[in-house]
Length: 373
Ligand code: FES
Image 1: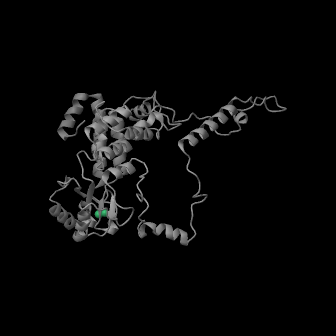
Image 2 (image 1 turned 60 degrees about the horizontal axis):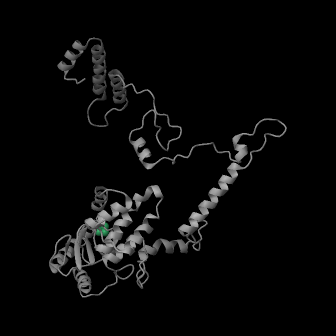
């Protein structure tokens, strides 16, 4: 391997992969890409290779994902990624002016980084905070209702080594530090997640629920979240219990009648004995979904009957179906009489019938009338 990732990153990679079922490990790719970005500041070719290797994918598969999402940077990025929303709502509120001012002040354009490596500027499409527009984010933390002057103040403070407070959430961190969080690991820095509060509009739903005494039925905020070891232990116990029930001797039969016990009497369940639908490999399920045929039932559709008759419909069947559809669905208000279309379909039918008995004559009629067969 040519990658030089730290032991800590490798340990974290193993922890990420362990979050997913053994045959679904490729689902770990998104957090793994954040993880390699947390070490290098972007997803380098070495990062792509690292992800491919630990997940058993090829580099093209990893590259396809890394280039699809804008949060994965493919070239060295500054400590602070400043994203200015220039989408419709923010734009009419002054977002473009904010962007232009920053671009001129920093001397960089879209997706470019200042010479000191501190700031990468990008314009962003809707950042999902339109009601606070114009907005900009720094490493995905929000600055609401910015104007050119306040935006300049933020970037100048960042270049001077400060870490300003965003409008909502904790004090700003670097892109590498943010990538650790996005990979799903707690940021251990003091105040990393708790020294700023959420915005009041964010809490509006909670306030209303408290005011009206609304709560989630059965929700206990003190319910402990199980560790993986505890969850594994509970699953093993449940499995052992199920196997013990299965191997227990079945009742001899219906007392007094001599009739054998029905399966549901033996298990105590009245549920039909349906095979679990999710016992196939993902590859098999994907292949069957793409190309179901008479020998491979459509997954997840118990009872679905795939037609065994693969004879293609005759031209006459198709013409009849089309004619019936046209007659049943007259054009809506386009000024064209519906009868004309149905009549044309009937003519087509007669020509198709004539053509099936005398191909040459049918072809002549079709070519005269311009009808394609
Ligand atoms: S348009 Fe800017 S956040 Fe939606």
